[in-house]
Image (tube, rainbow over all chains, first blue to last red; front, side, top):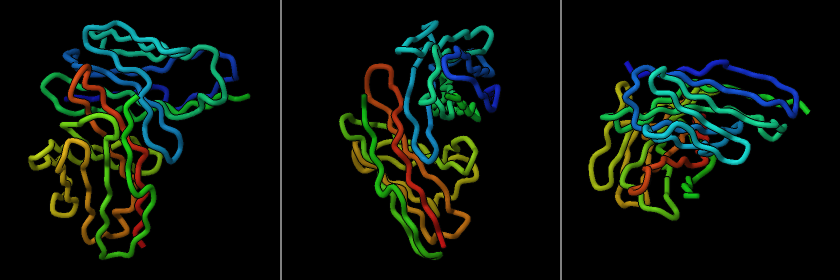
Length: 112
Length: 116
C-alpha cells in the first residue's frame, strides 16, 4: 500500500536555526518526489522535485535528499527565517501510478 | 516557473445550486490535470485525474455525477459541483502536469467554496 508519512506534524524553531523535515514512504519504486510549501488558505508552491535517479536537489537555502532504499527524503532548511513559516508537504509518485500521494504535512513556525 | 490559475478564488452559493470552478495552465500545456479538495488542517485529497479529451478518472468514494470534470483543452479543466450542499464546502485545488521534461506538477491557488 502506498503511504507517505511526515514527522513531526508541527515544529517551532527560533529564527536562524537550521532544520530538517522528514518524509518517509513505503515501497522504494518511486518515479519522483516533490516538496511543496503551503501558506494558510493558499495553494501549493513547488519547492523541489527529485527524480528517482537523483540523490538530492538544492535551491537557495533549501536542500532535499532522497534515499530510496530506506524510503526517506529530508528537506533541509538553512538559516531559517520567519517567512519560512508554513506547512511543508511531501508528495510521492510511484511508478505505474499516475498521481501523487501526499503526506499530512509538517507545520513549521519560525519565531523571530 | 509554470503558472496555474483558478477562478474564482472564493465562491459562496446557496444549497442546491451548481458551481463551476476553472483551472488554467497559463504558460504550458497540460495533458493531465488533477482536482483535489482539502479540509481544514488536513492534507490534500485527490478527487479525480483528467486527461485532455477523455473522461476523468475518479478516486474511490468520489461521486462522479456530483463533481463533473471537463478537460476540453490542454490549458483548461473545469470542475462543476452540482446541487451543492453545505458538506461540499471546502478548499478545492487543481494541479496541472507538464507534457515534457520531468513532468513536474504545478498547483493552482485554490478555490474556497462555501455552501450556505
